[in-house]
Image 1 (cartoon, rainbow, N blue to C red):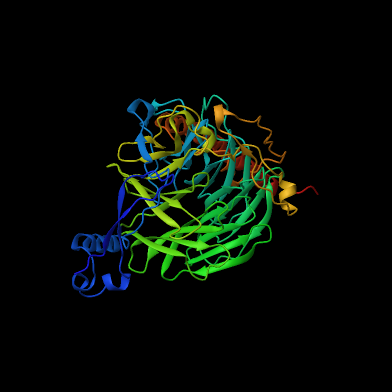
Image 2 (image 1 turned 45 degrees about the vertical axis):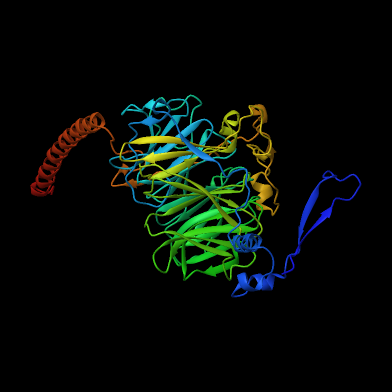
Length: 532
C-alpha cells in the first residue's frame, strides 16, 4: 500500500524552519471521514485518521465567548460595613423596598399605623438605633421609594394612602422624624404602587397606581401635566430607554407595552400568553428589552425583545422552577445583566451582545441568606480603585441586616481601568421640565469616573408655593394627626385625649345647664299674664 506521507526538503529562503524537513499529509475529503466506517475508507495512518475524527467531533461543541467580565465575582462587605438591626418591612408587594445613592441609603420599614422609611447616611454603618429618626408622613404603607437622579437629597415615595410625596433630606441625615413633605401630590383614586424619575429631564416624576393610570408630574408646578390611561389592569413595572423618549410597561393583563410618554400613545404591544411578564428593563442603546416572568409551566423565565417588533421574542430562556419574582438589573456601561430572585440567595449575571446568541451566561454569586429586595448604587458612587463595576444592597429580613455586595473585575494593575469604566450618565440633567414637555429629547450628560471626577451639580429643587392641603373628618385634620409610632408617643396621645375628653365633658355640662336655664325662662314667659 502506497503511503500518502511524503518527505520534502525545506526550500531555501527566509523560512524560519530552513534546513529542516517537514511532513505533509494529504487529507482526504471530509465526506470520507464522516462516513459510517471511516477507519476502513479513510486512507492514511490510523493515528492521524483518529485525530482528524476527534477534531471533527470537537468542532460541534459550543464555543465559549471570550469576555473580560467572565471572572467577575461578588464580594460581601465585612460585618462592620453592614447595617444591622434595621426593621425591614414585611410587606409582600413586589418592589425592592430600598433606594441608594452616593450619600444616603433609604429602606422601607415596618411600622404600626401609617407608613415610614429610614434614611441612613451611607457612612453610618453598624447597628442602627431603634429610635433612629424616620420619614413618617404617609397615612398608609409605603410601597416604593426612589432617589432623584440629579439631586441626592431629594427622594420620592408613594403609598397606599393614594398620595405621592417628595421629601428633602438634610445633608447630615435626619435629626428628628420628618412628617411634612416638601410636596404632596394627589391625583390617583387608589393606592400608588410605583414611582419613577425621568432619566434626563429634571423634576419630572412618573407614578403608577392601582387605578390603572400613570400620572406625569411637573414638580416645578406641583401638579400632574399628563395622564396615561391605556392599561386594563394593575401596572407592574416601568422602565425608560436611555434618553427617556420611550417608556416600557408590564401589566397584570399579560401585555408588554412600549409607550410614547408625552402623548400616551402605544407604539408596540405584545400579548405574552406563553411568557407572563412581570418586570421589564431597557437594555441601553441596543434597542432591546429584557423581561422576566413565568412560563406556561410555571417556571421562571427571561425573554429578550426587539423594541421595534414585539411580535416574537428574540430569545427565551428558562431559569429555574422557583416561585420568587426575578428582579433584572442592567449595567449599560458593561452590557451586563444581573438577575436576583426575591427569596433567593444567589445573583446570576450575563453579558448582552447585539449578535447571536445575544445572552451569554457568565457566573453566579451564591449566598445562604435569602433577599427581600435589592438596592443598586449609581455608577458615580462605586469604588473604581477596587475595579468595582456594580454594588448591591441586599435586604435580609431574617437577620434585619442590609448587606453590601460588590461585583468586582479581578485586575492586578492599580491604574484606572478605562476599558471597564467608559463615560457614564452623570448628575447633570439634560433638559428642564418645559423643554421635555415641549417634545425635545436629549441623551444624558456623561461624566468620567477617573479620579472621582464630578461636575458641579446645577440641578435644583424648589417646591412651588401652594396652599396647605387638609382633610377634615368630624373636625379632625387627618393630614395633621399622624398615628403614634412608639409607646411614649402613644401614652402622650392617650393623656392628651383624656384631657380633651374631660374638657369637652365640662363644656357639655355647662351647655346643658344653660339650656335648662333658657327653658325655664321660656316657660316663665309663656306663663306670665299678658298686659291688658
